[in-house]
Length: 114
Image (cartoon, rainbow, N blue to C red; front, side, top):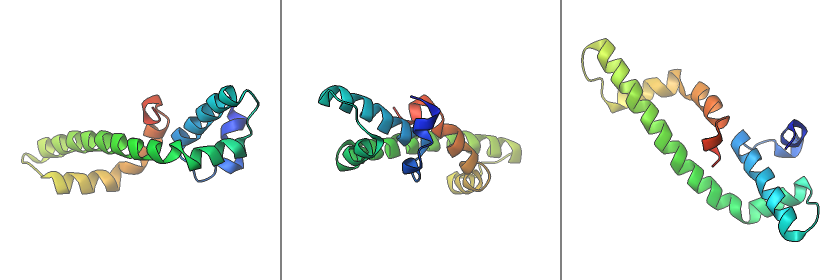
């Protein structure tokens, strides 16, 4: 998979992990059909089939990882403040201060698209 594949403008609007998953889908689609599969064909096939299940599975997995990060953040905030800050406070603070950077980092991890 080359960088030019994942930077194709037809991938705009897809997270990096989903771009990688579409390219893997394209590879196996090519093997199954015994021919070269274009990116538009792969995207159309992805959207009409495995993409929906992949997104649901990914959302569940991402949520589990985010909750773990918030729990860790809650522990740190509570330790620094000398009291239990509570889940809601920790979650709000994590979203405001860390969620965007974490999402960028997470999307580059292999397990984000597994």
